[in-house]
Length: 111
Image (cartoon, rainbow, N blue to C red; front, top):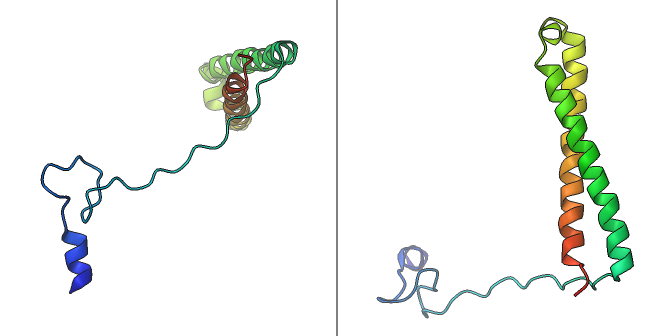
């Protein structure tokens, strides 16, 4: 069967890993999305300050929630435990989103 031969075909001897079994050529790479235009220095500073403020606030809140969860009183109060874990999940999601915003902003830093 031709399909079975194609699946079991190996790259030519001496070909680098990741090459095509039939031609030895590398498969086409996915192109990178175009880079966003850089921000002005002033706009970059303003946005960076806002994102860093969010990261700090969310990081502190996460620490507070984790500290609250480690208390003995929470271990026996299932309602409070559920509320704290739910809020912690929300803060974790917001923190991840703020980190993504920071990374996106770094890509648009002025040159």
